[in-house]
Length: 144
Image (cartoon, rainbow, N blue to C red; front, side, top):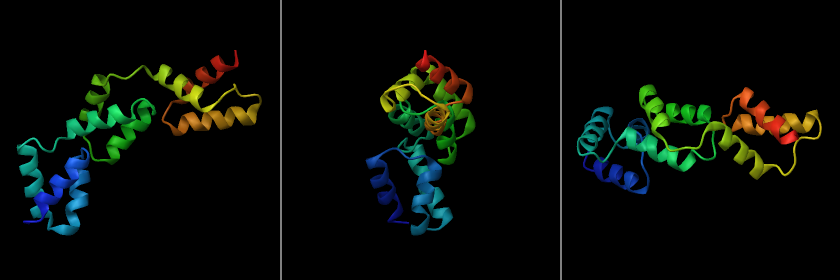
């Protein structure tokens, strides 16, 4: 128990963590009850905040990823669904279409010449978390 709090603070000093993520990282060093006590103490002193983690994650990854990918990653990090939705609404991100265009333009110099290239570019955008309808629009615009 004496080692958990300093370890948690060292982890938080490097970057923001969600409660679930920090609990997973601390679990080898203490019992679940001890970890929970330390995490609650950190939350009470506002050193640990899922909302702050979500905002930080969106700031650093929002420009490069689509909303679906951002939402899924935050979900896997243990952030509450309502908090994810609120964070995405409040985030100062360009709209989804502008992000998709910018990402596509950085990666590809030319519009797809054939079906195979179209599929490759579509898979790339899809892996970044953009929806199929949006991908069609971006690739259709690039071809015109």
